[in-house]
Image 1 (cartoon, rainbow, N blue to C red):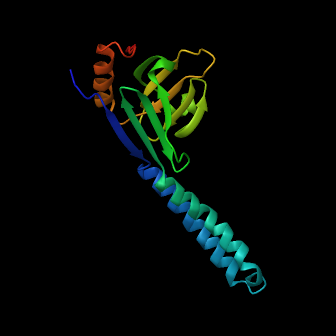
Image 2: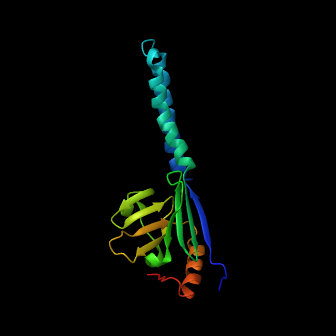
Image 3: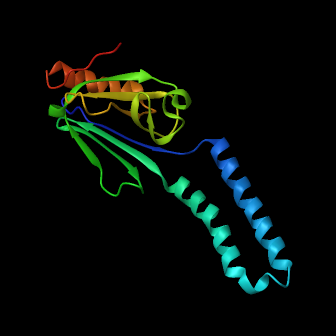
Length: 172
């Protein structure tokens, strides 16, 4: 048994298709703005067009600065979707009925990646189709899924914590 059952993971949006779409949007917006700026009548209000150009550029920056941080330790689970969450959210083991790692369909169950609400509850996911499913003791509280790209490492830590009787972990 691992004497220090800790898990820490950072995930980022690194999918090629996300990068391609964002670059395409920025290039199209730049082309649009520069074509408009060539028109003498429109040059007088060019700050507005720069603002229009900056919005997709900010979306690109936001997307590439986003990261999902997950920590599992003896006291509970912490997660943060930076920069949307400046401070990590904490879930104490005492509020959790059970946890397990499962495969899921991000598009069908949650409508994609990011912070999503779906028929299966709320999800925080960045890539892939594997996550930590959390079921709370309070049945009125929706289920929570936190995506992972390290399911084997996460499972090992959960098994170690489960063997101490500290948490209830099962694998359907």
